[in-house]
Each structure stands twice: as structure tokens, then as C-alpha cells.
Image (cartoon, rainbow, N blue to C red; front, side):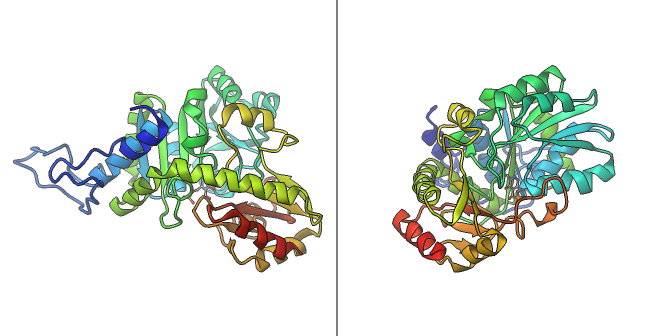
Length: 378
Ligand code: PLP
């Protein structure tokens, strides 16, 4: 069993041993009967430590990312917090992408900085700048590729070489690409991070996060912190993500195909000054993206000639696209990062342009999506 779509449907998801249930049951329980003290049936004792529905998801995640251990959390940020506290000590240093997801930046700059974590934000497309930012105390190089919301591309293999030469870990937030389009561990990453809220869940009905460790020892350390810190995914949320994962491949194919048609339309539109999409040959990261991704994804950002006013107007006039935060669901979403998802980085070096609109292209009929954008931009 090695094909991606086969793993997505079967890894960790054997029919239930007691009933034969093909769908993994939602084990909505906090505790498990013991046969005498310490006599665990199947290894489960308390659902913060482990729960069979979560175990199924964790095994599926590890299989899809080709890691040694998967761990499921209550949100992407819970996963990030657990990871950074597990592998860093106060006084350690982290390199962040120059346009990291705003929530990641806020976690490091406003929460973990108080705990003693130091950071430098660097444009990861510039490997010399990353090399120059390394300190003896650098413990993590944090990579997001493509980035949210500017869709910048970083060279995962190049960053792995730099991080490992400095005895640091390379962490890759693979939320935008999903394991279907990009396999960071095969390119040298030590840990993959996901907001499973996005493409893995895929239906805008769950908030969750994941860590996948490349090697078992690091996986063990992260597992200890998952239990010790307790920000685990509940059984129903784990089940929703697991169900979403089964159709990840077919959804991603459609997300990519629809995004490509939309990019073609936007590039030619007079109201648009720039389309940010790694599939465009003029995108500065295009060559690297073509090398390390098997498709360019469903996220598209555009800058509008009319500035913020036109950007906000577009967000208000669409009707098939839904104005809302988040991404990666079957329905198309539109948002203004400057005022919405990235408002937390306003005034920081990570501030995003106010003429920027981000599209999460869904899997609806693409003609309806094109007509919607055409009428909103008219
Ligand atoms: N990483 C990326 C790239 C994201 O876009 C997000 C959320 O938007 C997160 C991490 C955080 O995930 P969550 O919202 O599930 O905590």
C-alpha cells in the first residue's frame, strides 16, 4: 500500500476489530475500563494520552507525510505552540519566514517571546539571508511554502541543508500545499506542521492541527509534550479530519484546475495589477515550486489597481465566493488579509499590502466562479 490515494483511504483505518465497521468509529470516551490495575485492553487508558479515533488520524497523517509519527491537535496553533515549547528552551532562537502566517508570527512574537524565545523574520526565498540570520542559539528554521497570503516559495531542500549544518531543525508548515502536492520530509524537513482546519479537513467544519515528525525519537518527544500540554484533537474533530483526508487527492486536483482557470482570467483583467500564484512562470519561486510541488494549489492572491477601496469592493460584491476567513474548504472563499486574517501583523515587518485580496478557490463549477469574479470586478 503505497499510492497516495490508497493511503488516504486506508492508512490507520482498518475496519473496526470488534464490529467490522468500515468507517473508523468515533470513540467518544474519556476513559477505558481496565482489567485489573494496569490491565489495559488495546493500550488505551485516558483520551488525552490516546484515543482510537485520534490514533487512526495520527497514523494516516504519518503515512501521508512519510513521517515516523503523526500527532493531532485541537488547532494548528496548538500544534505550533506544543512543537516550539518541546524543541526550544528560553534563550533559543527561531528563524521565521518574512511573511509567515500572522498567527504563527503572533505566537512567537507575543507569546513565546515572553517565555524567552528569540526570533528573526527573514525572506526565505533568499538562502544567503537565512544563512546570515543563523546564530549559535538557532534551534528552528520555520518554513512556510507557499506562504499565507503572499504565496512566496521557499526551497525546502536548500533550507534543510542550512538548518542541519547549524544543528537546527527544519519545520515546514505544509498547510497551503497539503501532502498531496508537497512532501517536505522527503526534501529534508524534520517536522511538518498542518492546520488541518484547511485542505486536510477540507469542508470548513472543523478546527484542528497536526505535527508529523520525520524520525521516531523526535516523534516521541513531541508525543510527550502533546500529552503533557494537553491540546489534543477531540474524537469527533479527529474523525472529521480523517473523513476529509479520504478525498484529499480528488479535491486537490479540482482546486488546482479551478485556480489555474481563475489565474488566467485575473492576469488578463484590467482591474488587477498583480496575480500572486506560484504556477505563473513570472512568479519568482516558479521554478522551485515546479520542482518541489506536484501542482500549484488552490490559493491565489491578487493586488488591485484601485487600491484598498477596490479590494474591499470586490470582497463585498462577490456572491458565489463567500467573504470569510480560513481556506482549503470545498467552497470558494475571499478575504482582505490586511483587515482580516493578517490584521494581527499590522504595523509589524510582516504587514501585508492593503490592495491585496486572497482567494481560496473551491471545487464548484469553475464557470460560476469566473462569472462571479467578472461581475464583481466590472
Ligand atoms: N498555518 C497556516 C499557514 C495557516 O493558514 C493557519 C491558519 O490560518 C495556521 C497555521 C493556524 O491554524 P489554526 O487556525 O488551525 O490554528
